[in-house]
Image (cartoon, rainbow over all chains, first blue to last red; front, side):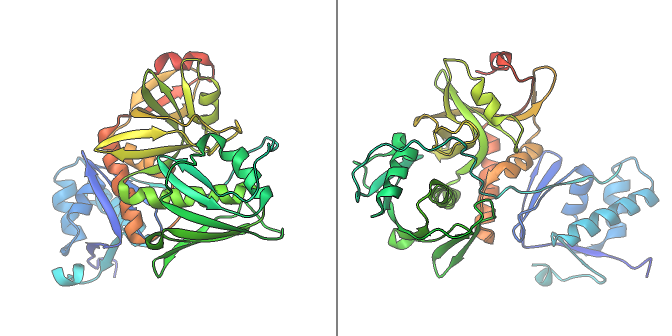
Length: 102
Length: 291
């Protein structure tokens, strides 16, 4: 399962605002606050439930920032796990329809 | 480039730091009192003469007996029990009634009926905490909030000095020169009025142990405090400003609507008011940079 695709959707239990290149996200469940830098914001904005993480990393991270594919994927996976742990991102193994995403 | 993510823990704790002994002066027993903080008058009703004396001592400058109250809180004084006033308060909404519980008090507030009830002993800390909670609930839908910050007015403008415990809030208030009117050394009252932000004096005191002056002024800037060897001011980027202001906003209830209101309030506030980091060495020279 190491190469299983991950599909991301933004939780509805959050409040978020992108300011400049950064994004502030607050969980409405536990009031924790996160700040994403430009790379995190790129992943966050691409979390549409239909695009696999590997493609997001390839197109939105490696294509925009000076980083290797392998390092980018490792960092992105850690990032997704952390946000998922706090219920800010939802992760599934298959694409999610727009209705399910919301 | 690594994906960076920073998490901030949120402050939502009622801990009264009043440390000076009470000096209670006379007041006629059995009268209800109207306490107006932030332009928001609340009538506190009690038949307990000891509590009434406490209220007069604690909120003297904030008493406004001529102002029609927006709602009334009836305080029922109970017998002392072992309780921890440093415990976290729990606040939740149930059938349109806000419930507030901590070791040393229980309270409820029904906004639609403009009244509430408090059960506590005759002490200043419990009612003070209830008032703080009620004000946070009242302010949130209006885009205002209570901020862990000392504040002062200079040349008609208010300056807020925000930080966690030990950041230097009380130090900044103590160092204020004579031309500065201190609004609070602990908890600043921020209201949005017609798109402009104002700071109000509060009786919510920190280590100075005395209430701030009961005046208000438009907010010119917020300084996030950081102790250092030299004085320096740096502008804080917008997202970081929102994150750090959110970290220092006092609120208790975690209903999603309320959390969103607080989040939007922080975003709107930081868009309108410049936020700086104030690295400072704790002596009077720091005030040369302010105003």
